[in-house]
Amino acid sequence: MAGLQAAISSEFLKSFIPETIYLVEGESAVSAPVAPEPVEVQETNAIEVEATSPATIAAPVPANQVVHELPKIPKKEAAPQQQKYKISGQNQKGVVILVTIPDVEFAQLPQLQFLQKILSAIGLKPADVAYVNNISGELALFEELQRELPVNYIISFASRIETALPHEKFTLYSPVTVGKVPVVFSQALSLLEHNLEHKKLLWGALQKTFNL
Image (cartoon, rainbow, N blue to C red; front, side, top):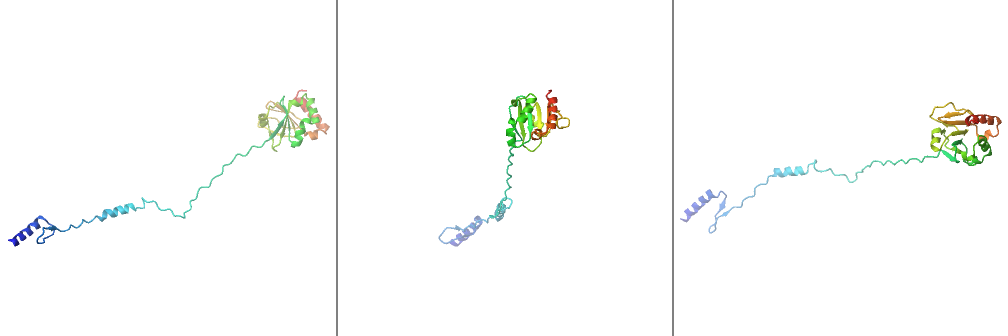
C-alpha cells in the first residue's frame, strides 16, 4: 500500500507540478530551485552604445590646446585740431589786417607806427581793426575767416587767400570783391615801409576800396 501511494503520489505530482521535485522519506516535497530568467543582453548593449555615441558626448579638449583670441583694435583718438589763426584787436568795423609773420612780430603789430599811419590815412583807429596771423603754413581760406570773426574788409600784407566763391584774379594793389567783401593785396609791411613805389600803389588801392 505504501509503494502504491508512493507511485500514485509520484505520478500525481508529475502531472500537477512540471518542475523536478525530490521526495525524501519522512519529509514533504520540496520544489527544485528555479533558475533565474536570462537577462536580455541585446537591450543593455543598445543602451550602452547609445550612451557612448560620439553624437551625444563632446570631444575632450586637450589640456595643452592654445586658444587664439582676436587681436584688439586700439581706438583711434581724434587728433586735436591745431590752431590756424591768431587773432587780436577789437575789430569794431570788421577790417581784417591779414599777415603771415613770426609770433614775435605779430605781438608788436598793433604798435607798429608805419601800419598805424596807413590806417589813420584811411580814417581808421586801432580799435576798428582785427589783426589776424595765419600760422598754419597753409593758405588762408576766406570762408574760415568769416567763421572766425566779422569781415567787412580785408587788407592782406603778403598773406595769400583762397576761396570757393567766384572772384576776379587776385593781384597786388588791385582790389577784388569776394562776396560783398573788398580785398586788397599788398607786399609785406617790412618791404613796403622802405619802398616809395609800393607805398603809392597801396595808397591808390586803398582809395578805391574805402572811397577816399
